[in-house]
Image (cartoon, rainbow, N blue to C red; front, side, top):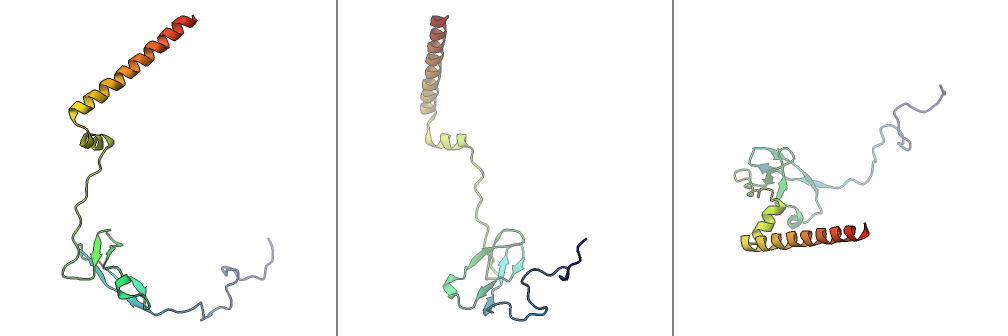
Length: 125
């Protein structure tokens, strides 16, 4: 075990204990945001930020719903679209007749490939 003169738990470059100046202090403003579940959150913004750059809605850190600045009228939850499968997207683009034609074309291509492979194997051996 080594005998070290360092203070246990202190990090390198920490400076003297009780150091007051830890960098430039910036004035902050706190905003209140409310979600439809009744949660209230108070994020801080730099006082130098223009009011139009401060968002009017944020995601509630408690439940993830949208939160706005009006306590009486919190933002409504946007309708969530259900997850669509690849097949659902294809069905939106293709009619049943087009799908049938594509299927027949793909099956014909597979059949021709298998026939060529069988003929090639027969010719070799």
